[in-house]
Structures are given as structure tokens and as C-alpha cells.
Image 1 (tube, rainbow, N blue to C red):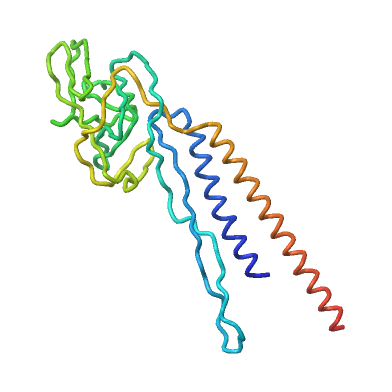
Image 2 (tube, helix red, strand yellow; image 1 turned 30 degrees about the horizontal axis):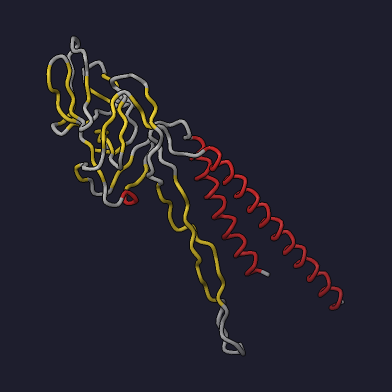
Length: 245
């Protein structure tokens, strides 16, 4: 019965972590450029204790192991805003922003111009072009961003947004504020830049709510099973105690 309890507990721990992932997806359903996550599980085989008196080979126990989290990099729907500083990406590319921790990647294209005239994201991180930071003067107007990321204004050409892609997007690591780090970035070749729009989250509200209900029911079923196992153990102890008396 102890083995059954341990196996059930491993599944409960995995379900609790899965619930955390689902809850985070739902919390970011309206976050610009957010990519949902999924938890992957695998079977972990562990042999029972060995003893030379066993008349049959050791039996293996099958535990649940939540071994990794993957990013769903499918594109979210585009929402037209008409704001010239809102930029969306069609394809698998990422914008590059310069943070205090170094360069990071993001799909959130809600940009602004700070007091120093620098193009920044909503957290104040400079948005990088192929030549560095993008600067504007106070009197510049008619900001235009082409489908290839080229930037121009009333003052002329300002540069070209740096957009990168990854052969293996799963190698990137999600950080806070909708940023990613890691991976091996290369110049984008399969990404189109769309001005005046933002990419909405790719989280499916109905799908995530359904998944939350499924995870909750699975957790409750295992909790009920563990309670039954406790009752069986208690009953066995009581009966054995009565026989000994």
C-alpha cells in the first residue's frame, strides 16, 4: 500500500504543477504576444527493494515525472490598432530588446518613444535595430515601418528593426515580462512585420478552462483513492491488533 501511496503522490505533484501552468496561461490570456505553455509527462520506472528470498523477479513501479515545459509558438490573432508604434510579427520571428541583463527576445510589439527619443517597449527596454537603438527627434512625424522592418519618418530612414528566428524555439527560456532568453538567434527570413497591429495571446480561453477542470477532477480522484488506501491500512492494523490480543 505504501507503493500505491507514493505513486499516487507523484501524480498529484505533477497535476499541481500542471495546474500552475494552466493558471498562468489563463492569467495571460490578454497579454500581447504571449505564448501558452504545456507540461509534458513521462513514465519513470523504479524497481522495488531487492531481496534474495524473492521467488520472482523484482517488480518495477511506474511513477509520473513532469520532465519539461514546452512553449506553444503558434501565432496569435492580429488586432489592428492604427497606432504607428504598434508592430506585430507574422511568422516565427522575435523582436530584440536590450535589457539590463542583456539582449532578450519578445513577441510583444506595443512600442513607445521615451523622453530621450528612443524606441522602447512598455517596460522601457530599448528596441534594437540592426544598427543599434532607434532614435527620434521631437519634431519627427509620419513614422512608417515596412514589412521587412525598415523604419522611416519625416526625417528619412531611421534603420531596420532587428528581427530574429530560432531553429529550435524550445531552446529559449521564458523570463518575466513576456521576454525570452537563450537559444541561438539568426536573422529572420520567414517573418513579416505588420505596422499598426499587435499580436494577441495564442491562449484558448475555452481550451484552458476545460483543461483546468480536467486537472482538478483528476487531482480529486487521486485524493479519493489515497483516502481509500488509508482506510484499508487502518482497517488492516485494527484487525491485526485484534488477532494479536
